[in-house]
Length: 189
Image 1 (cartoon, rainbow, N blue to C red):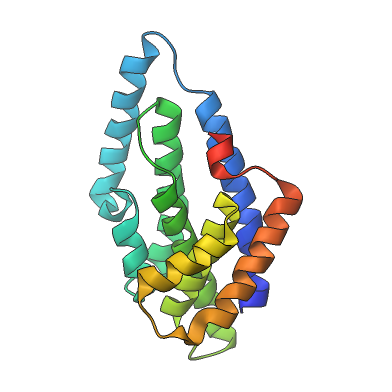
Image 2: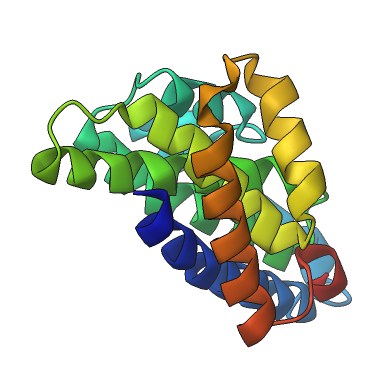
């Protein structure tokens, strides 16, 4: 799973970094700096009525994915809604970070890919797939594979049985991302 999911995470990371770069380059100017955040946050609030998980920095969402607490349909919906919420906030000029939203995107992607994988390989733990996806996307977006590996081991507190697949996912995601886009998410902003 990690060998297949790593390159997918790398491609998704490149798209996310480029989308962040575009959104940051199109922030409003003059009077739009007052109106755009209100519109973006108003739209975010309206969507959060049906999907309250998109609110916040993504930490709670990642934790839900790590324990397998999201249904497949909700995983897919949030896989598109959470990055869209982050992009709209960046484009409107609303201040916020990019680290935890990247972690949440990876957890959602890993969870969704894990659900698909469990159809082919029954018994695959979707929570572990979410952890591996979070590590891969985080490494590829930040261009920091070693720090992402250490962070995921510390953050999850899991037994160390997932280190080898995590390193495979991180290495392949980072290799694909660096080949396509050498800039990190912080350089893009």
